[in-house]
Image 1: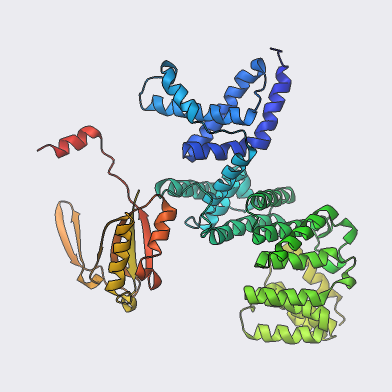
Image 2 (image 1 turned 135 degrees about the vertical axis):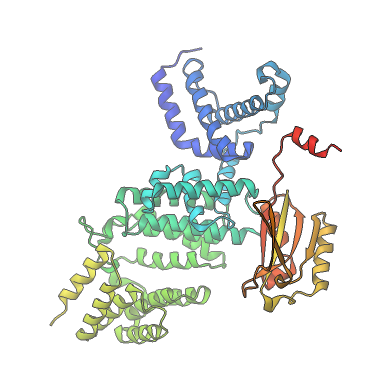
Amino acid sequence: MPSPDIARVSAQIDQIYRNDSRRIFATLIRLLGDFERAEEALHDAFRAAMEKWPSEGLPQNPVAWLVSAGRFKSIDKQRREQRFEHLEDRPDVAEALADQAPALDEKEELEDDRLRLVFTCCHPALAPDAQVALTLREVCGLATEEIAAAFLTPAPTIAQRIVRAKAKIRDANIPYQVPSRDELPERLESVLRVVYLVFNEGYSASSGDSAMRADLSGEAIRLGRLIVELIAEPESQGLLALMLLHESRRESRATPDGELILLDEQDRSRWNRALITEGAALVRTAIESQRLGPYTIQAAIAAVHAESPTAADTDWAEIVGLYDLLLRITPSPIVALNRTVALTMRDGPEAGLAALDALLGEGELDGYQLAHAARADFCRRLGRHAEAREAYQRALRLTSQIPARRFLEKRLAALPE
Amino acid sequence: MKYLCLVYLSPQEWSSAPDEACMACGNELRASGHFITGQPLHPVDTATTVRVRNGRVSVTDGPFAETKEQLAGFYLIDARDLNEAIQLASKIPPAQFGSIEVRPTRELQVSPQHAAAAAAP
């Protein structure tokens, strides 16, 4: 046997760890039925690889090797804990266990395990906060400290949420499986919600340092891809499309010193074309299903923006139509507010203002900064400067986010006396 | 695995699920092999609370009736996992008027010697 260079092998192990450790972990959870044991087994497996591979060379299927090694070591440990004889002294038992190991040659099975893990972590019987933390920790492999930093929450709080959720999974026996067909739509909704929340936390300009935020969005997109690969439901495609289309504008949303740039003022040449092409294609596939959900419609709106060469070319009639559809499926004052902005672009600020004032009259948007910012903008376009000033001031009182404040202050200062 | 499904109802909805429906639900659970036991309860104003403090038994009326949902009955079921338990609980008629709290049960953690000693005549 050739003796491979130790440095090269450990670099390969590093790479396998980076690319595949979460998949291996997910499979170990299925095989061992326990988070803690799987975590331990994962480390044992990689330790064993570090010991054996430099002299023996890489096995033909390193991932399958690691899964088997982790499983074997964990079962051996459990036996020893139960004061049974050492497995090595019982070749018959060891052999029987090895036989039970499922065939792991297929990539598909490992990916299924990751998806099972996603569904377990996003189980509706777990608190929403815990679903997010657990998914990031167990599926994406983020450290507790990283999750804490991203959500501006103390690390012990995050750790506690994760510990409590794992205890509930164990004690209440939350199964480790992809839900059956009749449960799927509802359960998928909760998974997609977690993924979108992770994405938004990474995309929102409100908090945390920017590198960490981009990582979070990246994780959400990776999860979105995994879900689309394994569950080709229109809404999983819609969500992935929505995330890709937003992501395509990440670099052009703000100036280097963090000032917001609105959609119509962004440098469209900086939009990521590859992401737009992929996102727009997914939107079309999702729409062809004829089963339109809120993510798909929002993605369709984002695609109209992404595909118009200039802000002036935007097909506002199409966008208003999509908002009408969205309102019908998910009535919400925020969606209605966004619709008034599109309406202003299609029919002029007078129509937009009338719709917005009717909406504000219902009272639900009173404390919502963006509603007053929109009113200010409509009034400014109509030359009603005093009303615009008042609305900008009201919006300012409702926001503490620095970039949003700076934007509103700039607009306020630009109003003619 | 055994789950206790605790049925909670507000006083206004106390009798909304007819006994016939609850009986049918119990029969279905029994037929599918999930039923262990179950029983409806009288309202909470018939309850008596027993505590032992410093070796003394204290008995009080209540808990005091509140307008919130109160424990109205229970089903002890046998389910494969929480998903199956949730699915079975959703079929319990009062789920439409009140709520069903699904709680995993646990076994007492005693050493085998202790259990044997306790069982000895």
